[in-house]
Amino acid sequence: MKKILVTLITCIAITFSYAQEFKTVHSAHFTKESDKDIYNIHFPSAYGFTTLHHLDNVMMDNLKAMVLTKYDQDMKAGETFTFNLPKLGLRASDLQEVIEIDDNLVFLSTVMDKKSAKHNLNAQVYSNTNNSVSENTILASFPIEKYSKSGFYEIAISPDNTKFAIVANMPFEKKTQEKVMVWVYDMQLNLLWEQSETLAYESDRAYDEDIFVQNSGVVIMSKTIDAYKKSRSTKLLTFNGKGIETFDFSSEGFMPMNMQLIDVNGLPMLTGFFWNGKKTVIKINSKEGNDNDGAFLYDLGTKTLIGIHDWSDNLDASDLKSLEVVDVTVKGDDIYMIGEKHLYDSEFRKTGNTMSTDLDYFYTYGSSIIVNFDSKGTLKGFTPLYSSRKYKNEEKERGSISTLYLENGLRVFSNNDNHISFNSFFVDQRETFHRPTVIPFDNGTSTVPNILPHTIREVKDYAMVYYITQYRDRYWFNKMTW
Image (cartoon, rainbow, N blue to C red; front, side):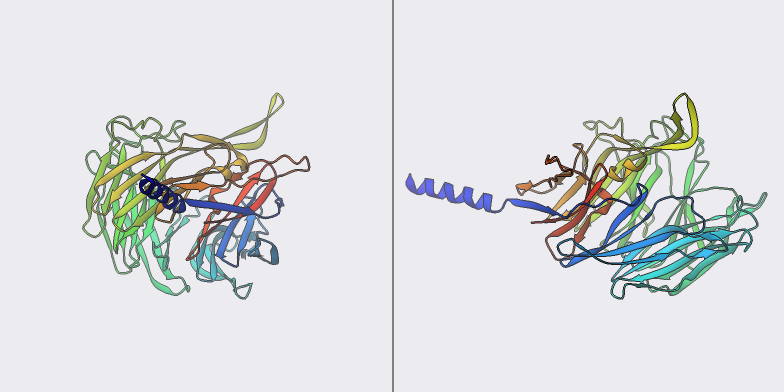
């Protein structure tokens, strides 16, 4: 009996010794220079990280500053470097994309100027080692006559982060066909190829298109025709620098909606959500969100829909509308896709009994779901996540969710409980997450802050994650270890 008891105690001790414990320490607090300031963490390492912050969507024509600050392993600030986005005439560029590659950040921005009659896409490369930025390089350009007919750019990054594509829709012209220009660059800003095409569709002021670039450099355009009619259909167009190929993507009962390009063990695939086209016509700016009826997996190599799965009967899918693909993780034979409802609205701000010219912006995040496929497209399960939450103006930085695959489990970070929430899925190991607590003000009262999900960064090859938390007007850097 004594021997059995000792064995049982030993088993319990082993079980507890394998329990995962996630601990967090935080920095001293800081405040933003403006409530429109956006912070992101780059170059995470065991020895610290670098932050980038800049103003978001500000209507400033002559100056747009990017501010980079280095932090040490104790999350204490060091040297700061500031540079401006390039100008064309008197207009400063608008930031479109920041690509982190090795020890560099590639800043892609766009600017147009009527006097110069140009619409340009620029690149500046920041070196974290040298704490310096390169001269501006114009990667793409086309002529314009006026701002109301200025065309637009779209940027796509390959899943392996080795290439990016720029697709330019030429300015609208009545009674002509849509014209596009395509450029593909490597991350050292070497032009791999470029292509100009006139498509078999009428020129318009806006299009329902999504752009992707494969690891091979082939560019894919998913183009939806008659998006708000019963005749809705979607085509896939591929560009390779030499020609263009067009083929059907949608089919009876399958209208692809939001999706993402992924690499599944060397095979390019599209995964996302679909509408079956049976109940209602997709609505413009729907207040409730547009219907999604399930998830899909599409093999681009064979041009085959290898997985199409309706929501299961035991799933409450009533609020799974207007789903965006937040993240996709591929681990061996498993594909984990996270989807979340995203809605956006605005209205004129009320001041007393009158309406001002200022706008309030409203953001809805959720409901959300995890979709688990295998690499053949077989559904392994739907896992519902969180109900919807609404945010106003700058509160949106607390919205949405972020995921990391850590220690053989999918980890989801959010503010589901009105403060930082950390949940794990597809993992058997027992675990404990110690929520960071802060004392934000002099009254000595501690509280659990919110997390800014978009700031989460994993340190590769170390059991370490950095992120930013917030309570009222105060912010903290955090380092989670296990």
